[in-house]
Length: 484
Ligand code: AMP
Ligand code: MG
Image 1 (cartoon, rainbow, N blue to C red):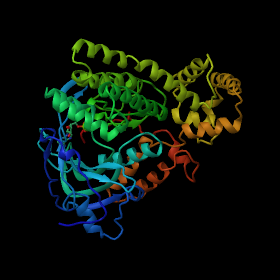
Image 2: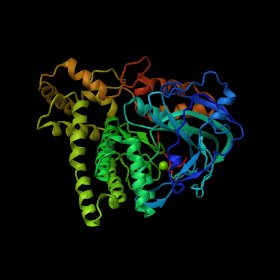
Image 3: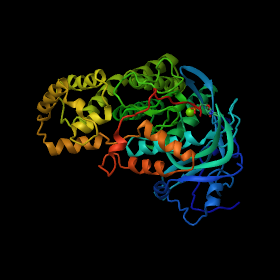
Image 4: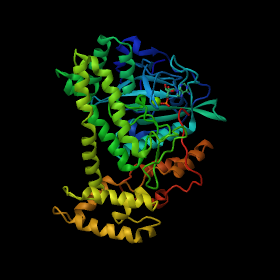
């Protein structure tokens, strides 16, 4: 059926080898109902749905009607899941097409929860309403926190029941990403052992994400270097806001450097480096403090894929890749220190900065203090419960901090301004997210809409923000789940 909203599709991935994908349509759903549409994102993408009635929008955002110019595919990929290599692919997602905006930016438009594909294995290809709304909330929150991320355009109910531990309402999320090329996509292509395919794919990824490398004589190494940079930037941002991804498998790491796959993720309240929310992460492989090391591990898997393209001589290629991978720690440490300095409003660097930073984190850990709110307190922002900061050890730390603040022509105006761009006043607190989801499941979208509104301006004071700053009051340890 013809459907001209102002989608402007140009489906470059579809033109790649059929070995990389399956041509498949979303499976039609019984009773579609749009429940969320991201109007701000529509505007950014130059999409205007305002003249389309709700029924038709519901059909459009479940795939019952496909827009003109779309070319629907499921992408093949592989990945190390908790360290073990597996063939994967879009088991419950379909790429509708690549939309080009007026300013020539290219975005994948993907349905998540759109039915079985060749890669579904034993899964039903479907997704539940709660987790799709959760991805919408957290991914949008990340975007407004200035953390690179995929985004969410819409959530629609399918009107079908899906079976998990209990019967749940089915739903489809429309995900927007600069691409869905993952480390795992490279692993898939590399595992096919066809160097010409790998080279074509490398060229494709470079042209799409890093066109500045198109004429490079050492594309593979340059891409590896850029990806190290991008992923360090990403993980430093996660550490900054206390985000725990929860399932950093190589198939959940993008080449663009955006956060992807909001399954078992959550934000940390009390500062504890060992924090894990994911129900299946028994060993803490993806704990808050392990995220940088896992990033490096994943990048090493990425480097392995590129070996045939780095040098004809395998030993030489490995040597060069290793040299680059081994730059990770130093780069990470530098970027993390600079980020923490900014959280504390410090100008320039001082030999003792590391001690100052680590001592604050240790104090938070030992005294079970909220991570986000501590920085709010340091910015003199009002928070509900600030008695803990009368603590003697904290006060003596604060004196050291005040002395350090004076270095390099700093002033209260200057340091507060800096701190305010690095320390969010509000993050998606787990209990607030749960409260919004529970209401949404009963067709009350008000708490969710309000939460989204608050999360849109995380660095600005807003009326009624205090309730959104309270650390989680959930009785039991908060648990999150994969593949829900
Ligand atoms: P994830 O944990 O979301 O990264 O998914 C890991 C793999 O499992 C991917 O290949 C997904 O497409 C697949 N998968 C997750 N849930 C389902 C489902 N309900 N049906 C089919 N495949 C799924
Ligand atoms: Mg995934």
